[in-house]
Image (cartoon, rainbow, N blue to C red; front, side, top):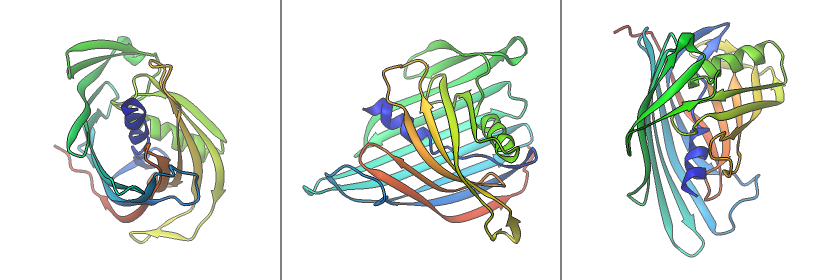
Length: 258
């Protein structure tokens, strides 16, 4: 159950803002609410919470920090508090990736991982070196992309008019996971962000399948991806019931070279 829950949360990693291979840093805040449009857990009566995502461009790397707090109220009166925190650093040249995440339910730690990934021999292969919860190493498939690189590749595919896109992806949660996207709808809204128009939104269905733990259930998420790369709306199921994540605040940020 916890592996599936962590996999579901990992689908909430957002596309780094990009257009024509340009990227921007930002801070986004999302409100969690029950997704009444989807069949859910009949024992879940209420869902509420918040998620924040901070992305910083340091010139040498993309640093991301995400905090998720969700409250699930059951019909029998029980309440579950889910807390998730993830910190990552992805080198701009794609050669290294550092990650740390922690998942707790009702204050009790359920799972955590910490480690790094390095490319070898020109970047085709990569090796994960875990430091927590125990030291170990593991290879991931050739061609595996880190989150920012994967999201850039997705945006290029969307801008090129492709209806589907798939590539191996590693974000610290799903070891060697295959992530695919299927475009459900493409619209041209009158959207403004910080005075700049957003010419297009793609509504896509994302599916994550672990290539290592084959018994895990594929995790599906619906995302509305703006042409600048920001995800304006997400829908998924964290195991307690279907959740909609609605963007409530967005701040675009300048590059901060260190």
